[in-house]
Image (cartoon, rainbow, N blue to C red; front, side, top):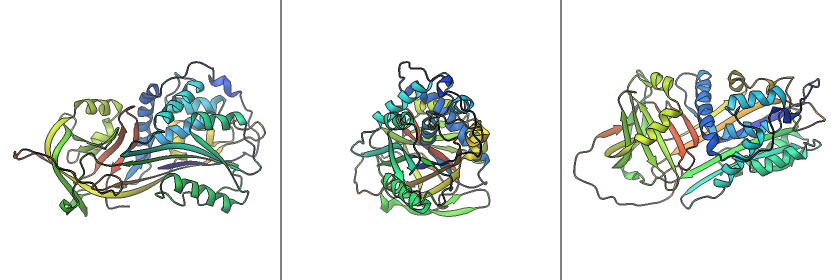
Amino acid sequence: MCSIFSCFKPPPESAGSADRHSSGHSHTDDISYHRLSSPNADFAFALYKSLKANTAAGKNIFYSPLGISSILSMVSAGAGGETHSQLFSTLGYSAFNQTQVNGAYKHLFDVHGHSQENLQLDVGNAAAVRSGFNPLETFLNDVKEFYSGEIFTVSQDLSEAAAKINRFIANKTQGKIKDMVKDLDPAMVMVLINYVYFKGLWENPFQSDMTRQAEFHVDKTTKVQVDMMSRTGHYKVYWDEANHATVISLPYKGDASMMIVLPDEDKMEEVEGYINKDHIRRWRNSVSMSYIDLFMPKFSISTDASLESTLKKMGIINAFGENADFSGISKDLPLKISKASHKAVLSVTEIGTEATAVSTMEITTHMLPPSIRIDRPFLVFIIENFSGSILFMGKINNPTAE
């Protein structure tokens, strides 16, 4: 996953810049990232609804709420006045000040800065500064200290600048995302980057020799052939009959899990309408071990989203306009965000998210287990267990649509 706020572009006329500290940048005690989990979850679902409204019917949706809230929080560290207020309001941070939010993200990045033996989670940020532009040291220091950010200079030549940024992104995403930046605005002075890379191995891998071709019902009239993995074993499951959904939690080795929400037939829109952070929390607390036959498609998808219109509809307006206040980034140039892009890639295979050989044996009973067949559109969440953070989420309408 990668997000870029790909051009901070000077408007033609200076917009009067308010003191960034007027937005509540007081120096109080830092807060734990757990304090932001609730507003970040609300933001994640508000973002889902907004992205869904801008996505063609039947298309896959997949993104990283953590990544997008992280880069917006980093942007807010350089914002002032109404620009800052809109960022904090949309993120749900109105009860906090910038110092507290900065400290919370520092806590998050410190926690996620240590890869586990079988689980890799790399979350970070960067600022690619165009040669000749001199952002305020206070902003660059905030990027480095609180947002696990790297600062590097790129050429005045736009093609060279894009190539260097793309190399950085490819390196941070293990080559999964390439050529993210294609055309930089001539007025670009800085590109802010966020990346989230997740690699997990199933705690209970599927056996590849059990994978078979099967039908996946995209809608009432469309069927596609998928590689359907299957496994009989113990999984945490909750049949939520009142809310027309089946919930399955698939653990990774380490502190993360994938939650799949499979709506009953013809109930996807109803589930999308009600689902929020409270349902996720309740489902996480309600799942219990069941011995089942699980059938799940193997798939690899990639999604792109331009976030400008989505974020404007959610309330972040000034940041993209001529009255943007980024006086915390530069006192010399009036700046605005001219482009915000997001790309996410998800690969689900028999052994996890990337290929690694592993063999296990499980002692089971001979009782005939119930069957859960994921053969119609479903919602997917990758959750970090320690903080409850939603690392990635989305809707898989068609597993064959790359």
